[in-house]
Length: 577
Image 1 (cartoon, helix red, strand yellow):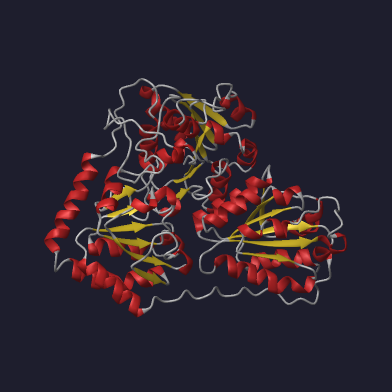
Image 2: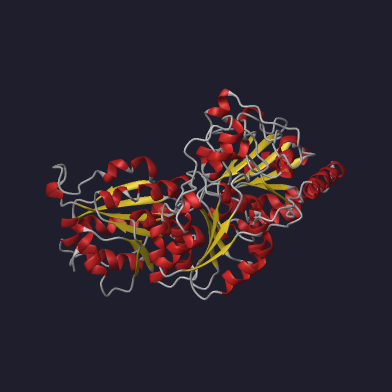
């Protein structure tokens, strides 16, 4: 029994059944211990794929995702996936090999200070020096990753620790996660007082709802109070698409109904959201008339960007449950007529500004295709890359649960979609998993088609190809006087031929009247498949809130033909979604 074999048994004791990785010199003892074990190791084709796959596994399940790599370049290739997990609060344990302790600090072959390099992007890092440290480190790593606001934890494992004698170590015993604190009564009473006074309240829900296992409590609260609700990118699915009170996503590419409701509200009830700049637009003009009740497990988020009139720190499920009946009683009493009128106004705007899917063109209209695909595959898990297609999915896919939507939110990492879909499929073998990608993003981790084929995963890939870096091109069109710089991808390879070379069946569609047949054919394929969709390079994502503007100042040529964005210095220095 050496350290590596003990670690394999400890992972199984922690409930790990699948891990994603790529072997190398400094992690070879661990891979030797994996041989013949009960753990399923998924061999990806690039370490970034391992990190994103573990990330997708964790997002889809709520369980801890595990990835493994060797020292040096193996570890550094994990960094983007680790950062994504940190910024989106995804529970992960990352295991990296390290050179033997006697060689650390000598610039040994494939030595890298991964402990220091990842310190800003993990909840905690461990660098082991002795095999006897394994029980404490492994137990703490999983406890920390799961507890409170989840996140990634790094275990840097020198080779001599892996081969050290572990025969005297006791079998691994997992630690309980930390109890989440209950909200304070005083803050609940203060929140109730503000709710009782509001005439134009809006619930603003974010990713913390799913992270806090508060989905049912959130839905019960909204249904009981009948308060119009907006959701962030990470909060989509907290209310099902089509729910009478779901005004849609707010922010830069949010719906008009959602953004106008927030801007006109007199009270924002913020549940597990953090006032991200993509959601708020110009922060100084965000919801200018609203007082704020901010509910979050993480005390650091309350008041960080927008002052909260009442901060309710603690377990979201208990917070919402405690407030549901009292808030409902107050809201249906005094000021009831004003609130009913407000709700009617919000719902009328949902109708008036609903997306249209009857684009008068022979080419494929991406929003209509995505909406139709979501209708044809209800309950599917969809993993996105980053760019225009990501926003189209957020706007037009019909989500029933938050964990059906896997997207790189805060980091916005291209190359996320395919490996995240792979992780989700391993977590839910019987689920329909769809990867929606763009031609720019897809090539960043295209090698994972080999992983898809090796394991026979029935993932369906929808590749929207506009032969450009679409979101950057859109911003250059709108805010940089159409000076298109390094966005041309007209020399894209034949994506169907690439898929075929990897043994993945490929289809193609470029006409709107053939979309239905193409989608049916895609979903009917038994096994992995790619649908290459040619779309208009000039297609843009609408609505759009320009940088340094408030969320009521949305651009949408389809509704405001005379509205032209006015570039300014702030917009030129802003970052595309």
